[in-house]
Length: 166
Image 1 (spheres, one colour):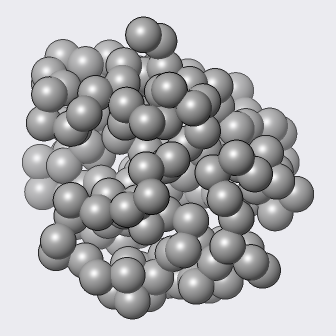
Image 2 (spheres, helix red, strand yellow; image 1 turned 45 degrees about the horizontal axis):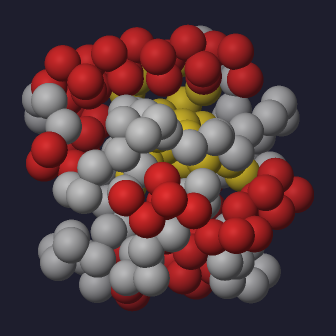
């Protein structure tokens, strides 16, 4: 089973980068497809989109100058199934993608994924010192329903911080 197609193009304000596709996303071809995932509600509540898009409407993100990709293309039931080598390789691939499309911001959805992909052991949620070409980097919490540390309101506020500066 391969990964799913990116929602990407030139002139993006923010390229959101998930960890890897879940099994439901891989089956449907839609990012953040599992009903418990809070990506789509957080995007709307934070002001990035005017309404809550459905995973099947992911291409509409381009109208908002937003896109989606993943650190690792391989689908899995849980991110814990991924290896550090997959994160490192994914980070290199992500850098190449960012240099090609040059979004204003890259937003990695998951601090552990960012730490592993970019060897930034002490990174925390928020703006990073790293840039990739002219692209600035921000780390957001993982919107998976498995991430109990962030309620939807807390997640939306974290997204809103990026929305205000982007």
